[in-house]
Length: 93
Image (cartoon, rainbow, N blue to C red; front, side):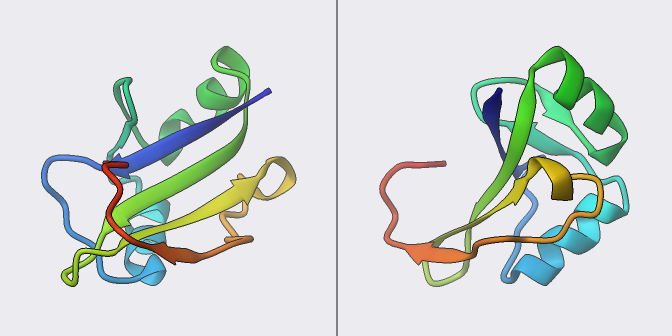
């Protein structure tokens, strides 16, 4: 199994995890880091084809901090964050 990292697609900007979850649950596209575009509609494919048991969302807020949180396998379909971390910009995105 593997971790899939999703970043905002098409120049989307987020300040909070609530903003990210709102778009994810609305079916808005995200971009698989070093991959392709996807949305919640592709969840079964992510789990089956890519073996994803964790999905991590990363974005940079207005102050330049990298923000991220991760969903574990049994929570992916419910979209409940298990961790939320702020960190300095280290070229993640």
